Length: 251
Image 1 (tube, helix red, strand yellow):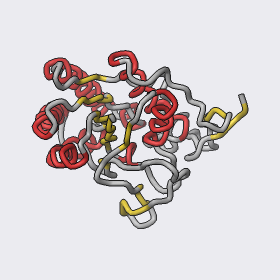
Image 2 (image 1 turned 30 degrees about the vertical axis):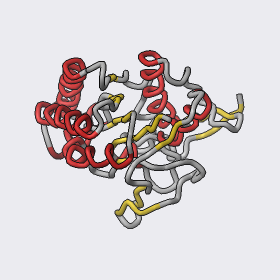
Image 3 (image 1 turned 60 degrees about the horizontal axis):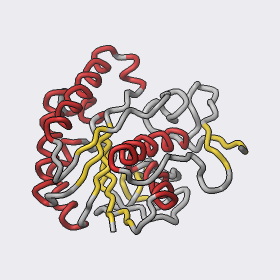
Image 4 (image 1 turned 45 degrees about the horizontal axis):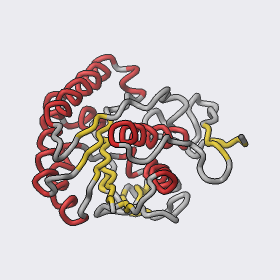
């Protein structure tokens, strides 16, 4: 049985009332994997914006294994000291990693962040020598589009990340660099310029799914059908951003 562990920041933990891309990925694997699997991790809550704590269990659909290693305001810097114990304790086989934006925004520059990526990989492999990792580049948020210096730092980090993945890839513990989600638009796929709405969740899950399917033959083609016969779309709100839950329309 394969054990998948989502690792990430606020875009991965999600906040109260959301589905999260973790839910979308679980749906995808359940439909396409063709074998037993589990979603694992030492944490399972959402972030509660009302209390400013990661204590909420108010998932939009709580009926899925919502385990993870993700935190609001946490990045490579924070997850590197935790990943070894998490891999060992949860016996994770595949890490789905989306980190970096918070590092670049508040803690470390592109070079320092890339050094933390290498340390993270080393810690994960020390705990699980055959662990596989799929790493998503930083998705530029609205700040990266309006702050030229920050945007350049995001671009630089993504270049360093690609080099780190190429340097560290090992047949015994493969690394994959996922592609940035196709057609991701911060004005349509997020509810605040950073955090994904329903449409954004599907695109992030789809990026991970495409990487695993193309490189490892794992799973299948990603389908944004949410299991109810509807496709999730982001309907623009009056301020130009999409609503937190997105909109729906029938096929």
